[in-house]
Image 1 (cartoon, rainbow, N blue to C red):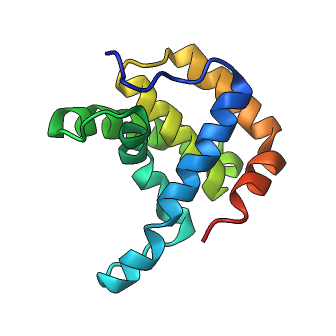
Image 2: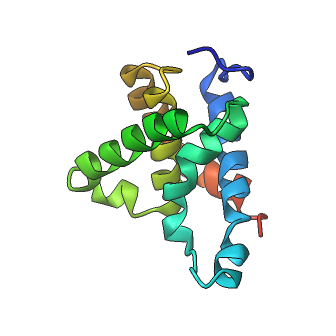
Length: 135
C-alpha cells in the first residue's frame, strides 16, 4: 500500500511523529468523558491504528481500519507477557501499536517495527518530553 503521506525516513523522524500522534490521541480524552465512556491515558494505544491512518492520509475505511487494528492489537497481546514493563508505559504502548498498525497496512516491515521500538524505548525520556505539554 502506498500512503499519501510518506513514512518518516529516519528514527528521529519517527519519534517526532509518534509524539505528535500521541498528542493527537490525547485530545480524545475529554470527549470520552462527555460521551460517558471515560478514556484514560493507558487506553490510548487502542486509538493508535486510527491515528496512524489519519497521519498517513489514508481513509479509515472498514478494511484499512481492520488491517491496522488487528495488527496492532494482536501484536500487543502477543508481547504483553514478554514485555510488560514496556507496554505498561502508555506512551510506549501507543508507539508500539502505532508502528504495528503501519505494519498491518504494509507500510513498514516487521524488522522496522522492532528497530524503531528499540530506538523509542532508548529515547523514552525524549518521547515523554515531546508529549508532556499536550492536554
